[in-house]
Length: 190
Image (tube, rainbow, N blue to C red; front, side, top):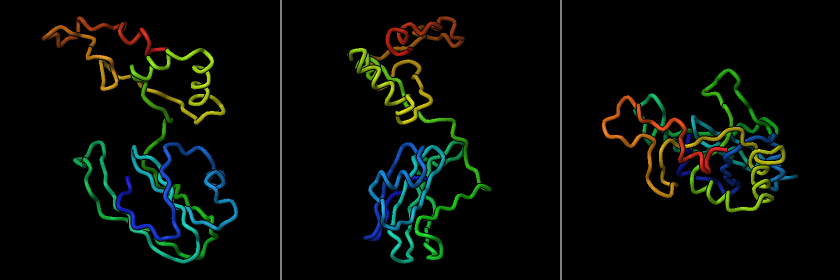
């Protein structure tokens, strides 16, 4: 679910967060909403980042959200869907969030990023102390909570040059595939 084209009332602010690991009260405090009443709307969809829309609870209002979807096992590729409307009801406390546990869309396995050759080479240029600080800030207890990562097969747009692990034309059985992934062992694979 990717919101676009919001018409946000003057009493609202939008925040896009890649990771959601804190309780909503902690998020509000971190964003500076310590004492003001607020209403929290959360939207998310398969593979999309979480988007928080914080609105001061000064009136009952509606917000139209344009939904553009790209989804596996469908023909949807940046396909516009019917818009969604969020309507405040004015009866719940200002910081009330409803989670519908009866509806499930996907399982979150973890949060992480890509290990690319460019990032790896820059990481290896740092001294040991800075490397440890980076690892802690991503993967450590006091970090942002990464729990997984991925490595691309063959070169990608963040590689130094184009390469692959089976450079033999017509080798559809991959009998010449470099199972040791020698190129990636140099810096990318820990």
